[in-house]
Length: 320
Image 1: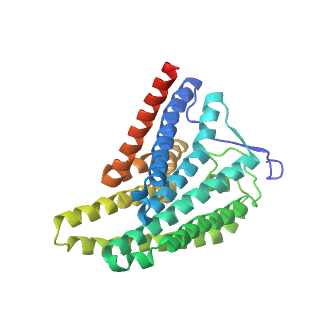
Image 2: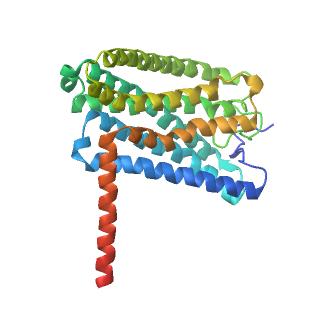
Image 3: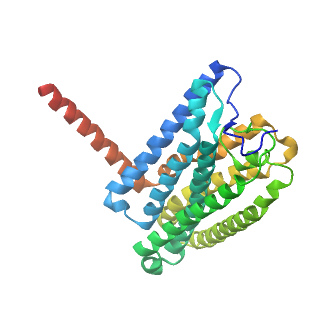
């Protein structure tokens, strides 16, 4: 059996058994990846370019879009390249980098969603104190805390995982390097070193989840007591997209990591991994833009300006 010092590469799980199906999956995931790039890129550009969107809520949305782009760009391009070139290999260093960046982006995204729930709580439950509690300095500090916590979590788990001796081969039963599947390759009982780091992360994650739930219980209590239907509609239009994104994030992660081992299989694990690592970054921009009139208006103005500039450029080129 090879040990970790002799392993120079890992073999990832292919999307399909035949190259023709691999190409089909490549085309499918290329479409999803381009949609994620376009959606999150439009949100980044709209928030950066429109002064009306320079508010705490959209500042955190900009951070979320950046993290979504990082998360999907960590896993999908390598998987698509492997499908296109009909290979399974990823280098040992590439696998470690993939684990680190995926954990960094997905952890920071979860902490950012927690901060966003606090922003909505203060905006709706304590509107008179919103300017003092969620000012520009506080926003920068909370965003830095989310990114920094994600970085520390990624360092902790990556260092622990790749310090383990690996005795069970180098075949990872997933389309990207995922810690649970790498731990399956470790020597007997060696994975117990990861338990302490796991307990820390689970405790922190449960604390964030409880904070989000308590925040939204308070928010809905206040919103349902509002006498104005227009006020309720405006409050729900800013809160419901966040609730939908949190629900999608938490539910897919829970299915991925809490499903019974008895129903686990490589194909099911692959589908579940796609659900929590690929689908949220692609659909989050759609969720946030569906009910948000300000964001839709900014995106419409952005696209209209781009089209008009393209037409003017084409006309000037034709005249020359």
